[in-house]
Length: 102
Image (tube, rainbow, N blue to C red):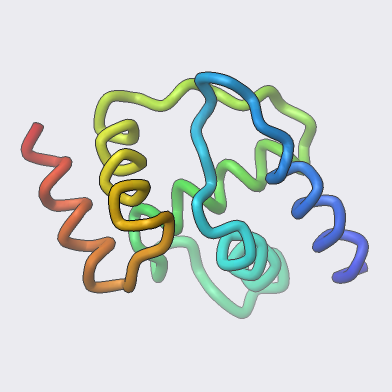
């Protein structure tokens, strides 16, 4: 089941949809999604960026359309993209704080 879910989520994450929320670290998002589904991790334990990624993977797995990012989420995505698409946990918290001020 894990392999099937990994393949499905990876395929769904790779499909670009203009104007939709983007998952910058697909592998992290998929792994977090699986750990939450298996009860090995709680959503509250993740950073806000990781939570958003997990929610987006969940939407994709359920077949729901991807939604457009909110202004705060757009800020977070822009900051992550500016850093090359992947940031450390500490840096993700700094970005989250910076974007919450807008």
